[in-house]
Length: 373
Image 1 (spheres, rainbow, N blue to C red):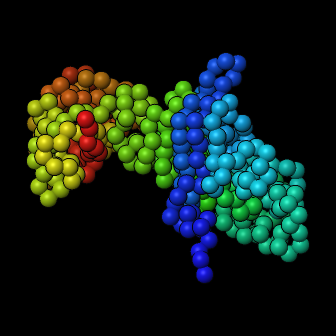
Image 2 (image 1 turned 90 degrees about the vertical axis):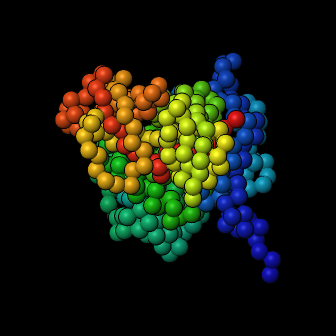
Image 3 (image 1 turned 120 degrees about the horizontal axis):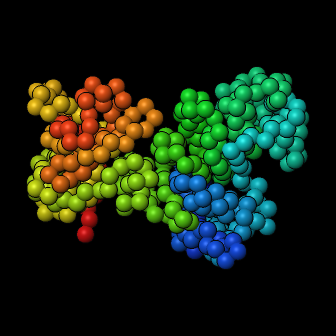
């Protein structure tokens, strides 16, 4: 028997949704301009960017909730619009606020099923299964008005999953929760989305959230996608200076591979040697970067502990940027700048200030590298 082409495409992670030449203008102002974007089947694509970057607009266009000024959306191989009922019924959404109805948790989860004519034991069973998937087994009879923020958002997710959507839209679903609950629920949402194998578009302004939930990330700036790819690449090797600033890194460094022995590349960066795990051969011009949290700082001149960290650089503190519980310390090594994330306690213990000499240590596996022109 011939395999269903839709199932084959979804299994292989082929695009379920494609946006081509998407432009949205409001009052003569262009708020979205995306040449092409593909959302692979059974994967989660995170749209990351600052407020006003166009993330929610792009989600609404791809989710057939809003018509673009120009361009088209292809859903499962065919062009689709807001007036396509079959495509619209294949899409469910979870928004920033749960907007639960009065009544029980079960009533809320069953709402979409009632609208679609699902009745009797099937509806009861599907509601129970959806609540179990979000960790709320047996909550059907609880009042929706008594739920905490995290519980309410779980119910909203169950209400979407119970419809068995082919495309799930999540627009800042955790942004209004407190930091501790958000961290825990981010991991839970990532687990649920992975286990459901549902194609998802996830809007967030939080890079840590995007890194946890997404298989692919697109960074938006003023309506345009300025970086796209695997979360480790996008967040570990910034595409340009703006992206670097947005994700809290120094701009990528330029270098040249001078040797490669068994996958360990030696890279010359303005006269200093960096080491990275890479298959790129000697003579390749590259861009490289290292995440601040992967850099450890020691006092200058002390004996460094034995370990697997290949990169050990003498550096000088040239900037300090206090954050929440950490301080981002920008270091200069022979004209090359990298950043390190240091706890406030460690910064005080090391007496870090502008001009302090330190030793920066990081592993070769922490260095992201790609070939450049």
